[in-house]
Length: 349
Image 1 (cartoon, helix red, strand yellow):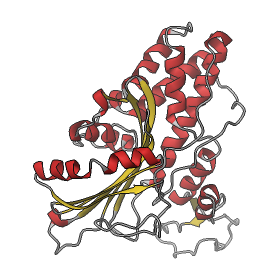
Image 2: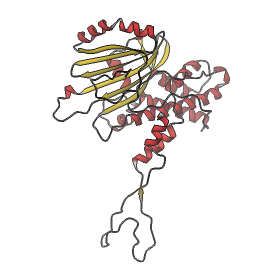
Image 3: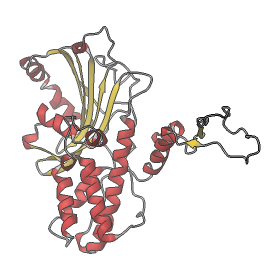
Image 4: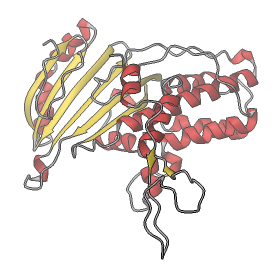
């Protein structure tokens, strides 16, 4: 089933209404919802809006609008200093660009990755609702930055109708293998005029916010388990070139009798690296045992990664981790069947 069809099947556009009984008043018998009281008019039972209905409406609205945030950041970079935009729009655009992950020398350490994940935007409501949470402020959160840019653009341009649909990446789904292969963002012509550029920026901002909401939806906890999954996109700059790192983080269910340090974690990501093509990895951690599966769509890149396997093992050991299975797969993986962290699924099976 296609990703879009799968989402629409899981969340129909018109879920059944939920009715709730009203509390009886003192001195009157309890009435069933919809019952007719003596000598009174028929009053329809009150209806409560189910959270599932709100989620369904959000998904239905976001699906046709969603697009990669890289489409927006590429446009903002292309018009910077070349188009006369209002000062509030410029400041908001700078905030969005400031939330990108800049890799100096192509390297990303753990602290920078943690900061980027927390500021990715999927935790925005949690940060606003919990004053004690150790999460980024609104000024350093990507969703907050996108909302600020949208507000400044709408204040300048007024409400605009959606532009013509463009090629979209597949929407994020729980358990889907991250892939960095997708349609390239269409260029924005700075010579088309400031208002035309502004309308394109507003459309791309709406598309990035729609995709952010779908990532948040894919990151909702599974009510049947205590597993935790997070799905997110990180706009990345490598050697001055923009790309996108698509990531999923999974935490296994933790039993009351299980040592918390033995809980399994899994991280999967994919990105397009300049001069290397599409590459990705699956990293698992259980206790101090770490497994790594690297893959590359390009044969030369996968061969280069394979030549560094021993060095990777040594690096893991040098930071106190016990290397487990450390392998390189040639070619992009297929979506595997769900499995617990700490176990690899053969991408070719």
